[in-house]
Image 1 (cartoon, rainbow, N blue to C red):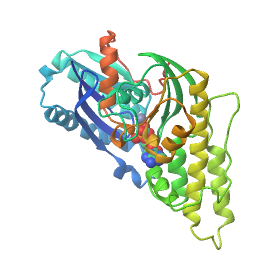
Image 2 (tube, rainbow, N blue to C red):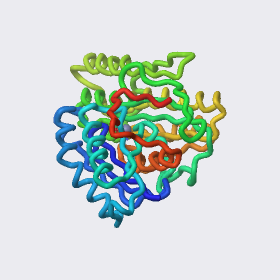
Image 3 (cartoon, rainbow, N blue to C red):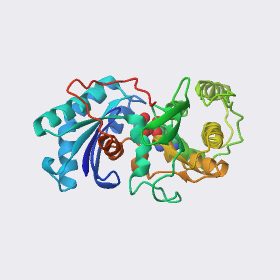
Length: 338
Ligand code: KG4
Ligand code: ZN
């Protein structure tokens, strides 16, 4: 069975063909990073316009690279939420048009569920992760520019939301702090790189533990970074920016890893899944692996960040479960995973 996945929820226009929910036949991503870099974050209006220009060529390329035509595809899976309204609309409308024109079934996909299903793809595992399907139940940490969620996945399609951020997403915090430190956009990779030369104990930044919950908060940390920057406006210690980056990263990573470990233990998880752009962070993976007794699944970079192979993987399971969208399928920018 071959599923064409389409993803336009944020700033990546992506299409992919996946076979039997596991094998990636193609995985095309048109990134808008350069377009948004000058604004230090995603500019929604520009994002949707760029999606309109990219969507048809990206889908055609995905079919071409997979060496398939529309007739070789069993269904079209598309992200309908959560995400930016103007961006989601482009993917959903294109998918509806393609389904109407080809007669293929349309399968609606929750973007967060797609981030989880990236782990069911064949090339899913990162270098030191276990290979093969994760054993269920799992606790999944989804950390990206738009999300910070801890989710308990009981079985295919069955989830419990454990907690999430009360303010900034983890990736957003990385992006905002990178901007303060003038490290550029996207901030995550820039901070991780700068932090390699820094001392994580040089500054004692706050950790919002929010006891008794699996929720997160990063706005206090961001303010602490700003205050420290203002305090050292004059002469700065050597390696100041590297130390700031290292101390900030340590504060984010410690809370994410510790709460994920607590959730895994409390719910008897058989594995922990790390997904989303921030899960590319090597120190987050290492810190989680150090705290968790069960296998911790990471992903190669291309499957950490937004892509359509993960949408097609989730689409395979939804399609097999009989889920179909009607022509009235609408975007749901605030969609949750329940
Ligand atoms: O999943 P993604 O591509 O898009 C969203 O759905 O948001 O994630 C992008 C986010 C950005 O905020 C970026 O700064 C962050 O992931 N990121 C990282 C790293 N690589 C990307 N954060 C920390 N460390 C990294 N190595
Ligand atoms: Zn995402």
